[in-house]
Image (cartoon, rainbow over all chains, first blue to last red; front, side, top):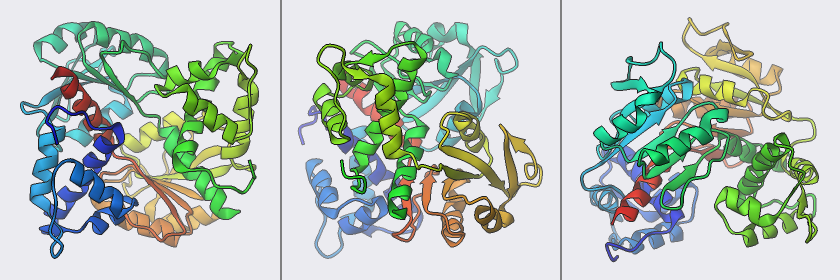
Length: 211
Length: 211
């Protein structure tokens, strides 16, 4: 694959999911894996798996499948940044705290280095190794700490204002976990996730299975 | 659309997202909306929006677009269950608590009615109106409360065991929020979400924009 070619959204998502599963394989002492095994883990087809992995220029052997560690390293070269990326969490409620603990130590190239909140009881506390600053210091800390990605976990009513301030502060990517969609300028990459959508999807298929 | 036809995964996801945005429109006093406005909110094409909405048998007018309330009601008829569905959260850590507060009052047809944990300090406490039971009572409460969907928010190392127990307890759909993929029998609908995948996607496109 040409280094500068931009992969489709869904391919990046799947590569991330492949790596997640491959890391579990390594932890379990598994050194090789077949495309149909990856496919089963992710509930997709093995054709899809082979197509994605061919797209990043890798192939396994018929007899043993893919080398797990080689594939992990290759996915890392493609989706990670060489020098790592620094992330801030805005809003240290239950969800913000869950995220900070969840990401801790999971990816060496993607570090949560700051949290922000307006609540005086939270400011200057440390959550899972991450310092919480006052929201008013956001622009300053983002610059100083070279933060490029912001995760929004504030109450929905504050989401638009926070997104706007993140853009003004020079952030390059936003992950919005609030139920309120936000708008950002086109040069900032935005990903939004609403937990209700996942739950509604499960509910729909449970209903359909019952019919 | 034939009532019994099962919509594709991604269509159900988008219908849920349309409704989420339409509910915000209603709250803002907006009565009609065009497909390109919905498309902009969700960062997809208006062709996609029109195709999905045609698929559920609805159409707007050229001059005013879609009637917001009618479309909300129709999406509800399609994705909600007539008598509602009852949900349990397993694992009352930060993420479990975030979910319980987040869903509270958001959807009338999808109710979190119980939480489970093994920690004695959490058992018999009430979180955002939801009673937390001991994990050992799970099978009994799922039956008694007629719960059909389980959300897993336990530590990753416990995920497989919890999924297995949920299936044994008669659950019909599982939403797994842990980083550890689980396996369930094919008659149970499984949706897995890993927050790292969303973050890695943002990180990848931020890197690509920088190149």
